[in-house]
Image (tube, rainbow, N blue to C red):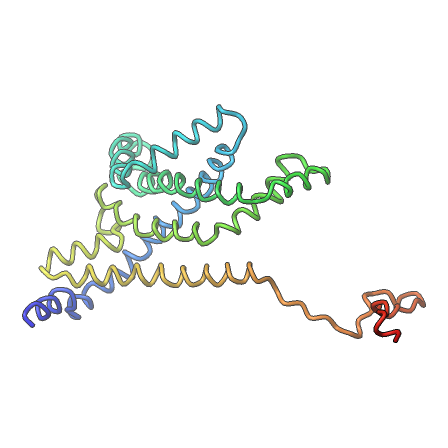
Length: 267
């Protein structure tokens, strides 16, 4: 009972949560969304380029893509953020001043691109080769066939895996606090850390975790619903009175064809 009481007092202090809630809503949540959405867009764009390069027949495109993927998938996210954020800090100071967000977004984008590129590559390669051959037979160039036929099908097939990576990106955005943040630049996790350090109670960190759950759980269910809808397709209702547009200009629609009578029917 003492352990349960300590756990409750340490992580479920409603007064501490209520005190941290305004900063979570007005500062932490917008900053977390800026980091996650910006890195997701840049990472997806770069990931698609890596996927195309990874399946290229030209080794000068394929090999750099593989090396990039191996490096940024192998390094811990914290190490990459520190490498980019601290290593390029002098350049960042000259370009946009003491704001770590651009470098943090760049680091998160580079990490996400390595994973998203592999996801997209797997999806593109899962599309049957006959799809590409059919598109080329219809007169599409290789680039047009990839852009209009192959890539859309491949992305649709890996949509759940892509969203799972975006969820991981939302959580990895909390590592940007390594770069040092001003009070107005703090994301959800950093605000929780500050309140926990000031009050000696961890309830603000639990509140930050609840915010992350509120962001990721609906996203998971939404993409599952979209994926299920794409797999099932749309139900099409057929009107028996519809003549298919044949009864125009005085023409009469023909009745539907009936199956030829069998030998049993003739008897």
